[in-house]
Length: 247
Image (cartoon, rainbow, N blue to C red; front, side, top):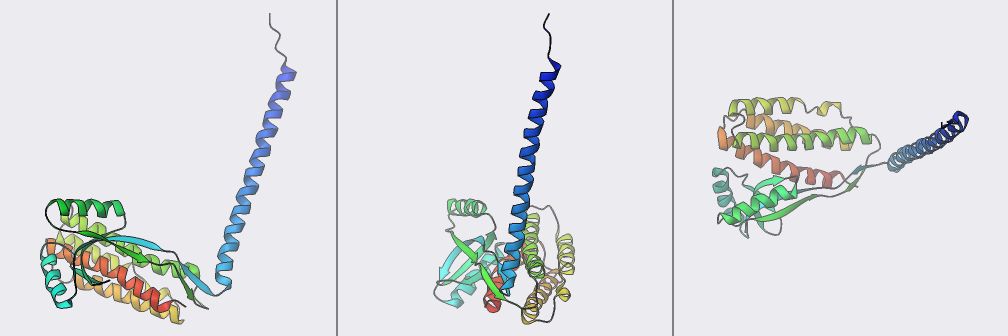
């Protein structure tokens, strides 16, 4: 008969437990050090009185480039009549854009389909560059919340245009969604420093644009095209805003 040594087994289990306990303590210490490091980094970022905006990239479908603005405007109108944004970007010529995507693969997929159908299209990268902004009063948290209002709206506008194009919603519901979206934008929570005032003005402008489309009476693809236009315009407006308020 085999005699099991309970004493040896207990000592072995205790040894394993102590090792697990030791590694658990080491892991907790490492996590604490990382957390403190992140906090110090955030504090250091504000000690120089600067707010930070991290780079973002979007990808637009460009249908045509013109040297002449009037020609670009005429073509943009025809694009809007075909459910495209018809936004004109002044970027090494007047580029008429049909749509914009947060995911490059989505944009490339649309471009591939357009080219296959005989409609020439290329990808235009819309870059919102990393920016340092001097502000003695506005906190990084409040700045991030304000900027999130722009990007949340941009993302919802994209989803709404897709829902209209795929008949998952109708014009009345889309208009109601636009009204709801503008009501969620709260510029009044910002202060009275220069950066806050500029952010407020931009947020008020966005609310006005949403209200205008919601009350326009546009239907179906026409409403979708208006939403796509605002979606792209918003990105270029953010770029202009960052350029205006940066140090």
